[in-house]
Amino acid sequence: MPRRSPGELRSALPSRSKSGRPPVIRGLSASANRQIAAFERANGFRAGEVAHSFRRWSISVRRPPDDRFWRWTDEHPDAGCSRDPHVRTTLERATWALRRKARRELREAMRPLDDHYLSRTVHNPFVRRDIPWWWSRIEL
Image 1: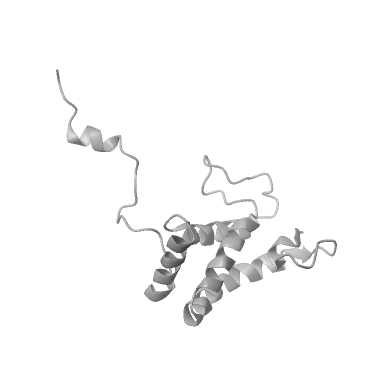
Image 2: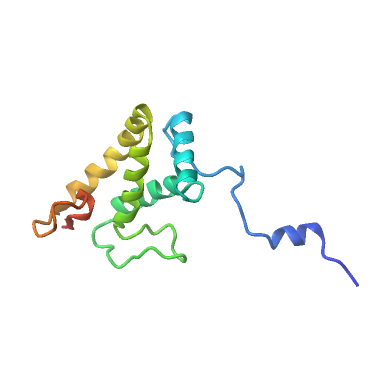
């Protein structure tokens, strides 16, 4: 009975990143990325979840406003997340868990995205005041 070759067995395994390392947020220091990884481990997130949330927030904020029918799905992982505020909440939680210098770095990386989001939305006056600002915005 013929056996399967090692290459055939490896091709059936789930794919992983080339380097074997979880994704990081480019532009942040190694210390900040280590603190983010520690936050993910301590709070039960998958490795690289904060970097993935940063990427999704970036994609969703920069997508054209007439692209409203897209939703985050497994079939279209690069399509963004339809202005998903959950990813911004994940980023905010991570930000407050970091030390001051790393927090500043992450905030500086998020500032252009937040500014772009604020420029394309208006405040909803009918929402409760105790919710975060990114949940209380209306798209133009």
